Image 1 (cartoon, each protein chain N blue to C red):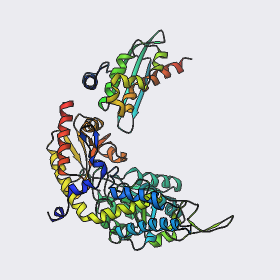
Image 2 (tube, each protein chain N blue to C red):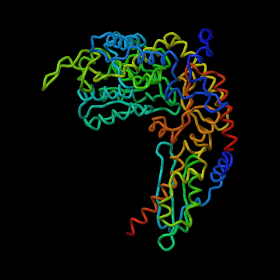
Image 3 (cartoon, rainbow over the protein chains, first blue to last red):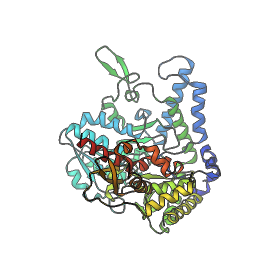
Image 4 (tube, one colour):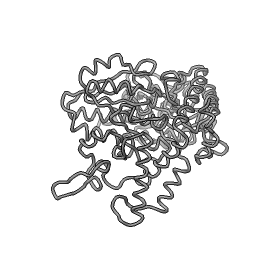
Length: 412
Length: 129
């Protein structure tokens, strides 16, 4: 495959210091939990380290050299992120703590100003709690209603009722670009076109998509896009809300405090210009710098190549998982999903699977993966989940399968 | 001190052949417990002599190996204890019973049955001041 000819797994693994460690003496790490958080390349760790060693100062205020340098580094990261998702302007890139905070920002700022009693907000059955709970809170506060797009047995959105839902003239349609459990990549552009035709805005949870596939906000169709730095080779504590500039201009500020103001009087304030209007207080500067380095890393590797690599891994992983007796994989076929495989093994609790695999250094997640309603849909208390990224290899899939046979032997 | 494999064997034995796994008719106290995060659930039943000493403990439940083996171990080991002694039994105790190395990362699963049984004991005491 042409994509793989430029994709050198050994070189990529060498970029991530943690991947060369042993979990226990003699047991190398096989990290299959990138949907929870990704590992970080040395360039990201060094960028943050250098920032603290050389450039640390508060941003946007001082006139001294370090303050200017720190500001340039932080705003440089914003420019990288804007280019990475093809935003029209850095004014559209709001730094938050993570995708969760980005979604909450929309729920509090846009939601409080635009959602009223009786209005409908659309969610889906496959959402992460972070794209459910803020809307439940807003709906409860405003007396709005939640309309739900269900999920099919095959793990895709069931859009058969979507036209009926749109008849209710919802204000907002909230959906994930890629499920963190099923791996399903949703047809966001088609859904957004329909939603827009019905007068609704569209918020997309990109926490699982932006790290793994090329995302272009000018063609995606979303009005709001939320994602986290730590799932895309960057540090924790920094995330992004992208939104169309006109929307952000009209939205009231979110948190109040320093940096988000142009002028403060004793009894009132004037809000700052975008993007600073939504960034109160000293931000996570080093983390922003780290995210900029992560974007450089991913851009250097090429998102199309990352996606192609993961498609190969997931196709192979599904093929191998399905040959293990008693394994059930949830979600659509490989060609319709990203690098996430949630599965169960008959008669063995997912926590037991994860613990036995851990003895061989294989890190998978077990639980509901912050998607309890989705697990209710399939009447599962929990699943085990292997999730892949650019640094994973076919050999690691083989190790997972070998590990599952060990689990079966132990509980057989 | 048992080694890691012996603890694993003990846990699997209790999981595959649970002791006292049954609903109890005429229990003096019953409590339900669960870890919503992972779907482990147990119901603990107890019977007392002279209003203080546990003469029978049974459980019903579903969940991972650790949670269900722990229920079986607790049901077995709690018999003969007084309610005060039961109240003194803690997470450290059950972790030691099951092997610290094996269950240290799973203490919520390991502690579920014990904490549920203690809740049943407290409920019994609270109803009879």
